[in-house]
Image (cartoon, rainbow, N blue to C red; front, side, top):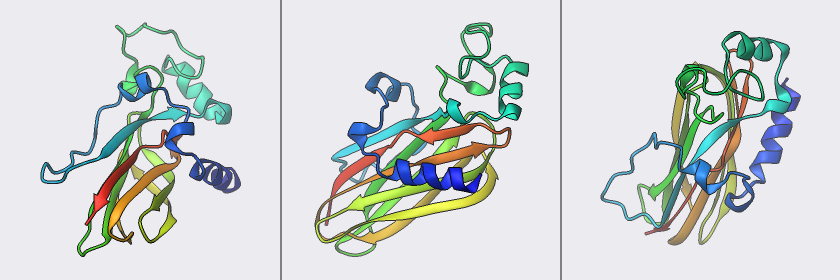
Length: 193
């Protein structure tokens, strides 16, 4: 399982907002789980859906989907619950993710705030990658850990230099009932002073 998770992390860390494979109309379905302070001027900002990785469904996850009549990965009956399915699924999405850039604690430092909210139940493993680039540096940060919660957020601080900086989030999460979901690459860009 860790080998699959590591392979997915590497593949998704190379994703960019342009190649994330998430349509703009799907992005509109996601509600923001983070509210940026109004005092900061944002250049760009996105939230993105977390979508199921149907190719990696385990037998346990498939049984759960069928038993709970979830309209997910080709199982269940669409519209049988008044247009909404159990656990808050909307159009097959399994949650939302967000990333925001802010000025850090000193000149040329960026604070990158990122996280996710699952509508598919508790997440037991997260494998996230934050990529950033600024005026003087760029890099990646891997956030891999076991957990047991429906939401997660974190802040990291990176010296990017004074000027335009950008960051994005990718990765996968595993729910307690065996469903893998992939992060839809939220990103942000701003001037770091």
